Length: 263
Image 1 (cartoon, rainbow, N blue to C red):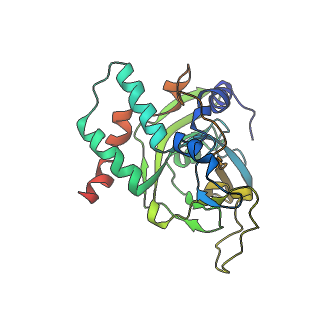
Image 2: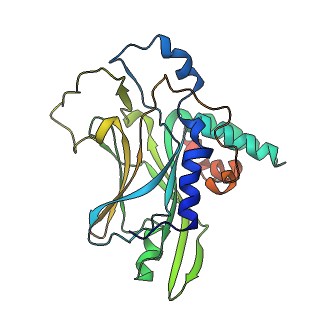
């Protein structure tokens, strides 16, 4: 893939510095004395952010390595809202109503996709997920497909010499009822297959969101956080925070249709 540009370096810096506090929840940290080796616990990512990895295929530069995704959980939601309030924005009451409904019923992956592929028409298509198959690979090796994909209307087009750079934010919505997102604490025996796995499980209890298309495979990957890891005080405080995610009102505004199914 292409070497990381400034945006890619910013994303990696964000993952290492700005989002370190998303490693685990305070509840997990408080429970560290009661969790036994080998006990199965709910999956919680070490970091909310993941860069995009290329995993073989005909067109390794289909997506740029500047692409990244955010695992949107309650901690990220709270930090997103706090930043909006701090910036003086008026919180949409409907967004406040929608947020807990979404967090309870769905896992949302916020994808910031970038392409400067040689065939610019294909680059334009892939950031809008046209021709791309999407699935989530659970720690036990099952595949779950999104209940809905929300393709953002915020296409950004830039020139890069003779090429065009396309950027778009898309939301992948997975039903929580279909997910088995649990991992064993260190010291557990290897998990036994039920004989019905859809694919080999991601390594080390990780969770992957896979993008496949044009004979090429890419994935975002999140590593499990363990309760003994102590979170920092603010998961999204820093210079890159505004670039890393959508605004609170914008994010939940795009999910209104999904949330209203539960009214």
